[in-house]
Each structure stands twice: as structure tokens, then as C-alpha cells.
Image (tube, rainbow, N blue to C red; front, side):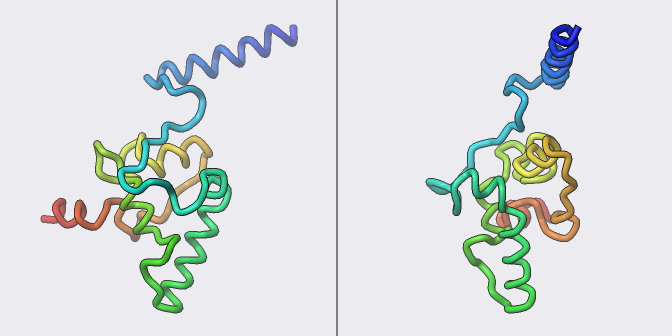
Length: 126
């Protein structure tokens, strides 16, 4: 009985991924960065600590006027905007949206900040 239940759960997980049209497996689809050789930190650190880094940088920028530092949101957007949407948070497969949906975490950064690199945001403006 227990094996049958586990098999049913595994099939359900695979079916839900297949119904989504995804062939990437059970994790989020992360598009390769458009610029640079590597991220500002290693992958494990970024997965675990990116929010703390962004919050720290936010405080340094807002309170200290420090812009363009190593862990800036602008830097993330410049490298990780998707090739199709030109954004990190407009389409379901975009960099931020893909991981945050997978982790069931709400993103509120882009209620105030642009999700597109500055040069693309200027082109899209009326």
C-alpha cells in the first residue's frame, strides 16, 4: 500500500511538470546569464543568501547613498533579464519568477523597481 501511494505521488509530480510543457525536471528553469563569466557569488551562496544581500545593499543605498555595489539589484537585472521578455519578472520563465514560483515565495521588488535592464526599459518607454 505504501509503495503504491509513493508511486502515485511520483506520477502526479511528473504529470504536473509534463502538463506545464516543461521538460526540465522538477526544479525551476533558470536561463543562463546574458553577461559576465560568473555571478558575484557562487550558486549555493546566491540561492541561500541573495535576499539578505539585496536587503543589505538596499539599506546601504537608501541610507548611505552607496550605488553600484557588488550586490546591487540593477546588477542582477542587467545579467539575468530573459532573452525573450527582456525582464527578470514579467513572464513565468523569467529568472526571478521561475525560482520564486518554485519556492512559493512572493516577489515585491518590482512593484517599485524596473524588472528590465536600464537600456531595455528606456526603449520600452513611450
